[in-house]
Image (cartoon, rainbow, N blue to C red):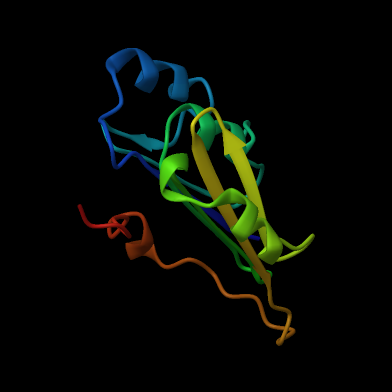
Length: 133
């Protein structure tokens, strides 16, 4: 069983105080001024990803070896016609959250095409930058 959590702050770096707060979420995570990255083989993240997005981050990627994939993106609300995009919201694949003046798009995919699980490779933590700035 493997789960991989990736969060990135694009608009502004995390402060030292914020990094310390995130350390309380995980003692094993790689945390720097832009990212929080952790891989779990046993156990789980000790925080809700949506709450972390609302407070600290702009991008979140999650994948699990049983087929669940989640991507979240936070953008300024003045760039979004919220009434228009809400027409595309679904219970399972697209959720739209308002957080202050921002909008968070949460996209989820569950694939169970195979009975085989895959394991995260050793290089996954070292090649952690999914988003280039």
